[in-house]
Image (cartoon, rainbow, N blue to C red; front, side, top):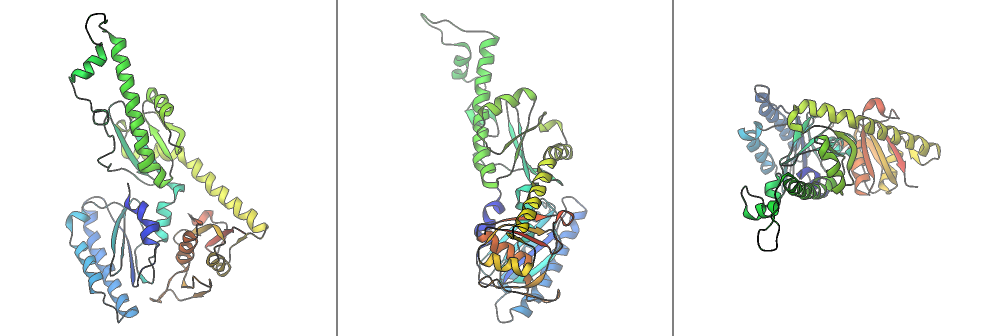
Length: 382
């Protein structure tokens, strides 16, 4: 459902003809704060323009920059901003993503896209879905510890029971199901019990349709936990029909319509915080055990060579840290560079991307929870 979810590995991590341009910017949701966003964006684009001229003086960059300046003039785009923005471009590609999390300003021109900030955004450790459900309708939210937003559902998603089951008020067939068919030898059925049976049957069918859609469209592609927010009497039925392996046991015992978005986020994060901390603690323990058995490392040069050889199973990267330099993906050799060198990438970003391409897992860890002071910690396959 989220383009970034599907395009991260297939497009952003793919090889592209340089220059590859990456722009990150914090943005604002409301007026008047959002008025400054296009101004800051233009300033970042000017940085890109200077870097392109310095690093790729013989390349045609006007077509790349034109799309950035066109976006700067798109007033409707800036009026629908979230908390962060990521833009990626080559001569053949232009991708724009609104983010639920603020990001640090960056304007980078390199031989590949700078994607480390997105790793933190996409990893499952801090993200979750909330399914709001009652007999008549379903809503879906995506959140993290800082913010939660209602998702725009696809046209095929069963948002209401009426749409999902093809029900219409006063439908003759629905009346027959509620009261039974009259005629010789047939008993006409009336009463509260019959109507309740009909309602229960329709609710079950609706819940099954919602479960299937959420599982296939959201949970399986993202791999993030799903919380159910519903009245207590609806929890049992939904769990009885659900086949979603990402549905967690913890629940929010009210329909989201009774809560503000901030209250919904607070309640969701209170339930998921122990899982988040447990996962990080488990990864840190695994690294410690692997390091003791010489199956782990924290030296960047060593980890880079292991990544090039396809030996990295799990990589812990310190959030918001950048180490300028060059990485050779064939040999794994690295060369450090001064921070103001416009011709280099972030080594942590490059090594992480290579580990991901080789099937490894990359987890972005807050600085206070990193088990090393080098910005990196690797668990090797062998």
